[in-house]
Length: 122
Image 1 (cartoon, rainbow, N blue to C red):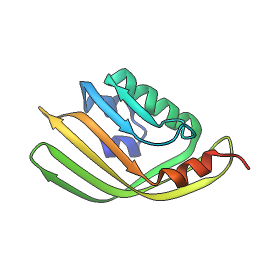
Image 2: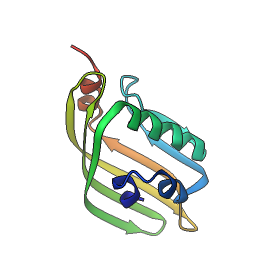
Image 3: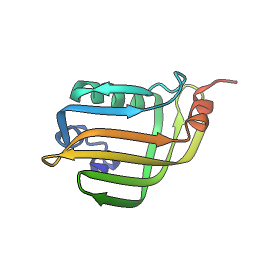
Image 4: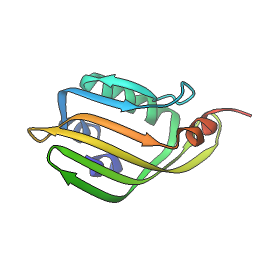
């Protein structure tokens, strides 16, 4: 999935998801893609909001750990908010839960204060 993200390959990203996936990016309303998204259509909404509001979003993977049905991925996330021209770069972590090789839950943790500041004009 992370290779698909790097290549902006939406069909490949969606192929990794369970139909009932629960996708969560906790953060303030200033971040266009913050919230809880249910199902594949919800993930499409998340990705549309992210891609539609960020110029050059990049995730650089630093480590990956797996145990049982959990995978934890850490790295750095950066981008520039199209509306404000403000850039951000912060640490982030993803916690994925898998079932039958598909992602059933995706929890995204990042420095949301820094990201929200980039979305805020002025």
